[in-house]
Each structure stands twice: as structure tokens, then as C-alpha cells.
Image 1 (cartoon, rainbow, N blue to C red):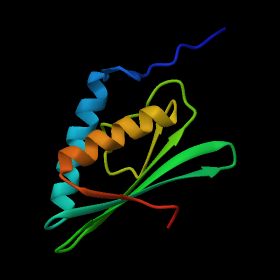
Image 2 (cartoon, rainbow, N blue to C red):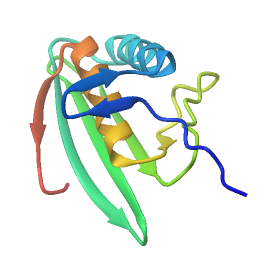
Image 3 (tube, rainbow, N blue to C red):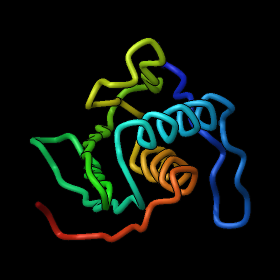
Length: 119
């Protein structure tokens, strides 16, 4: 039995984002603004844990506060954890969906973003 993957339709010349992604990004940016004071800086990096690819995001408010989010890949359907947005790990089907979610979240939060090779 094949299980259908539920993902946004992202290609080289198209972008149709799932409505749930937009809601998650908006709610996460609201949470970030509540937890962080001042302009937000975000450090983003990818890593592997066994066979699972992950995306880690550390956010710091210039005037105080911090927040960390990890997104892991490999599930058929995204777990948005709308009932517990303070969860630190979210599961998505693939790295494309992870990067999409994080980019929209950080754009909504107005974060200054840097990519690194790890912690």
C-alpha cells in the first residue's frame, strides 16, 4: 500500500504553498516576537542524524530572549503541532518542505538570517 505524501507544490518555476504552512509560519513568527526582544537574528544549518535530515534554527533577540526550532524529515504528512507550537521539533516529508516552512516563518518574523555549517 502506497501512502500519499502531502507537500507544497514547489518547482523551479512554480510555488503553491499549502495553507497549513502559511498558518504555521504566521503562528511561529508570532511566538518568536513574544519570546524575543528587539531585532531577531536567526542561524540556520542542516545536519543528518542517522538517516534523518534535519534543519536547525536558532533565533536570538538583540535585546534578549532566544528560541530554537528543529525540523526533521522523513514523514508522509507534516506534523504542524498547532496545539503545541512551543515544541522544539517538527516533522516534515522532505528538506524542500522544511526550507519552505522556515523561509516563510523567518520572513514573517523579520529575522536577519545567516547559514552556517553547524553549531
